[in-house]
View 1 (tube, rainbow, N blue to C red):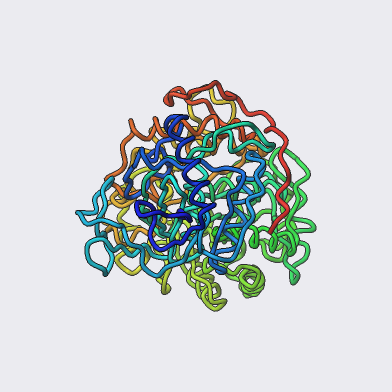
View 2: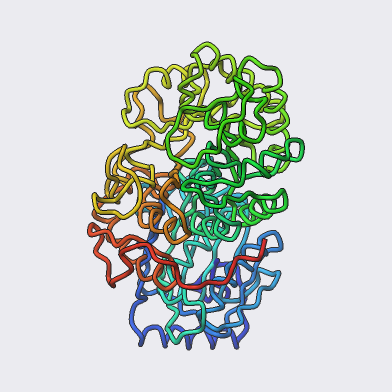
Length: 570
């Protein structure tokens, strides 16, 4: 977004009427009397690549504001208006033009930094693009945000960049912007310029809906949480011993029988094809790609209950509602198994517009090594035949490589020669170290839910590691990104999901988005503290970590969140 009404010292290239200039001048005068904006330009999480504050350029949003946007960016503008209207009470109409007005979104192939220099964190200059000093190529997800006393402009090469810029603008408004109803506040935005882009292309979180089932509305709310912090992938763990959570037309009992159980004996549940399409569409509008996981050859008890012919002994096991792992597997010696795999991955791939399909592959303890490698090799080819790229837990490493294969590494010791060898053969890695990124680990010994097999993960431990150098023998260029998994053996409600996500999810998000040079625990904890009031206002349950200097007293234990409208817009 950029300023619409621009005098000589404002933003270039925008004409303004005398009425607009008068209104802008009045706004500047009022802002000067009111004092600085309550949020600083460098308070954003994840930390932007480049920040240049201008305290004289604070902008105050008022009831006359209009969002002006090029047509291809209109959907982002509508979402931004939807975030801002409830608390401000302003109409914030969206118009298909970038001429004039205090709020503007534009699309441009190249984004100028507006200054020369070295391009280091906190400064401006050419950084990584083909242009010279003062020009930076930000890719599909990068953006530039300019705030002057006359207006705000977000410029990006594509809608994803505009969306991330809009999320940054949202954070720069005072915390009451998260109110679901109009409140009296000065909607001041700190002046200056941000130029920003992600460090890694893959930044995600995983939600296990197999151990405990979560309805569509809960998943949509989790997608909103990811998008808020510029995470762009949601990995759904759809199948496990305790439940099968997606309908497959060619094997209907998978959901109808295998989907009726959950850990602890709960009722289970599953997503219809339309449910899944709704999740995918909702995520896509927020520039989040859904990564479905069908866990094979192990973690399959629910499937074997539904179809005993897939079991090695051809006898249905009893339904399983416990939390042990490694005891179940489909028969790798039976051709019927591969027909099953082909049908399931084919239907799931057809429902999934994103490029990835996750095969699982972990903890198949009872499958002999040779049989495991042969099964994985064949299953990978079946996924590739659907046009999708194979993703799997790093236990897939010994199997033959297929083009584009991605291994998700969840170890706790960075010395892993087998994974390093798979990378030398062409694999890329998503980093999810169990002792840093597994969000089902307890924060502290007295955390009421969660596990501790990988250790305790407080916010600092979630933040202080580097994905690019974590696994020895794996070069930085082989790291596709990061993901924070949340397994749900002990997590049963949306409030508990949020409690385990926050405040650690933003820590992992910063590792995935921000340049390594910006990573600083002291500064991060200070920036993160300002998000507590936002979460409280938005009704988001979170853990009041003693590591963070919270400005208020938010909830300390999982409780049901403040009622909020169910997400209904695709």
